[in-house]
Length: 493
Image (cartoon, rainbow, N blue to C red; front, side, top):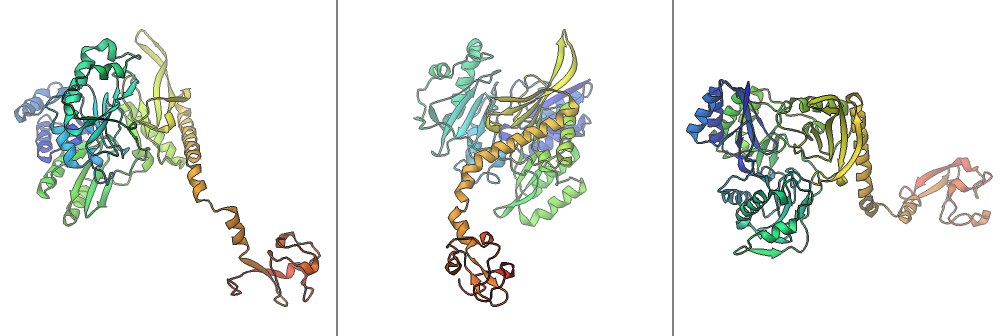
């Protein structure tokens, strides 16, 4: 009864005017809510008998869309994080847009275009993954992940910015026209693919080292936040649903305040950048009018669920309640929930559903496996099964234990860094020797460094190691009659 309309926004960049017109077209089919997807695209559902009302309007607007299945996956980019989560990078907003403008075709396989100094946008969930060099401006690393496999291969060449679209088109053509070699083949060879590429008239340079993938650290991506001399607004919806009425008013406010773009993110959220201080009250008023909550917990924001998956959302909320109830620290972790066999989820720790019995279309006895990515880095494609065959009722506890494993791993990897800042034992001992012990009766002092040679107490003897019969050398006061005082109090420092 329902059909899904999919609209790609290349790089996650949306024009407020274009989005407004799309929402008006959606409203003609009585669509009240829309969703954003993992690949920075727009989804909305309508009944079969209303579908023509919407598609006719989209056709009039010249909007490209697909129905029910995405045969032309969106090009995703880390542009939404540019300037607010990524700073001091040569990869500016203008360069992102130049690269995206060069794509005069719609790729049939997944393409990611990312800055290396970020973890907000997945770098390796595409089939053709471009990663900006952290050392050489306008040059890019290329990592291929062959379709329907976990096989990856990095090119030994760096490619210049202006050739990204051309190389992408040629690589896609080679992969599609040689499916036996490069699609669903665990023995696919990156060297063979790159050898077939026409390198004439390409600006290339030898890569001195592989792409440097930053450690995962998810920023808090919602709320109205200051950056430089402006503000950015991040909006997250627990049920992933954005009302068309709200988004239309948001687009109108963007146009009124001269905000030229909206960004959709791989976390199914939106970000509005370049908000002026003088317009901050207007944005707050919009949030209040539609009662948009801005205070979700971090352990909820770091979940990724498949697109259009009510079952995954329900499981996410179930697990979040338990993590919150246990007050589990999840900083630095990205959770994923996977209920479909071939879906792409970005995760440090993945909860994967399967059935114990799956035969002739009959599926019964659902259980869940928990998998950890290699080094808990969600950009890694390999990992280990932490726990398998879990019934739902023990899943929260098993997930909590996987988090504890991550925390131990993080602690061990950070140990050398901690050692660097630890106070040497000699310094600790010197700190202890900033104190003396003073007789309360005659004010005679005992200095641990000097000892008390008159009573055969060696230098360096701690006050606590003095014999029970030790007494003050002046008034014969008992050891218990001494008090610890700092040298500074006695003006000896």
